[in-house]
Image (cartoon, rainbow, N blue to C red; front, side):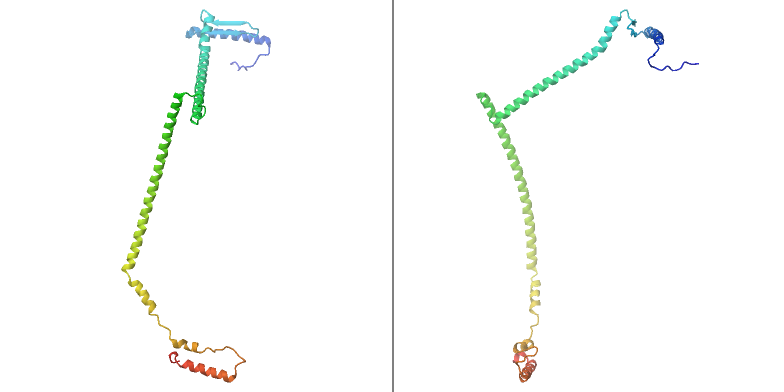
Length: 245
């Protein structure tokens, strides 16, 4: 029957703990020895008991040399990394200092371009500053001229487009006028149509003008004889044409 799985936790019983320590210590030392012999490996093993007692094994003649080798391989890499990080930080700081100085120099030059802090400049520095300002002014004028030429070209292009549209409209207007001149009969027919309308006869409205005494309803100031005479006159005028009146 196989052994059961041992739970990995601190053994509370002191005697059992010491017995287990002795057995496993000896087994670990034996495994280290076997590893060094079978694989030709350099093995160093250090064990401290709970009471502080040292147990060690080293396949090489000197434990000290093995530990020095371990320090060179382990701490040497860490030290190299630390040195590399320190050098990088130093390089970054130096780059920061250079950029800061350059920024301050540019700010000082900008103030000089605005006419400030010129008291400490000598004749040569003032001439150099004047040359730089002249060059900058020439570049600004050149850029301004180029922009103006571009705008002028755009306006000329728009003018050409408007002239072309105007010419097209003028041609259409001339075509319309030419068509009207080439077909005058259309206007004459219209005039003839208006002139051929039949005139109203004077006689049809003569009795309206001749009879200015028409009355509607009953007028108490007029006698029966007067109404009879007026009616007879209206009948006569209605029978006689207007040109005979």
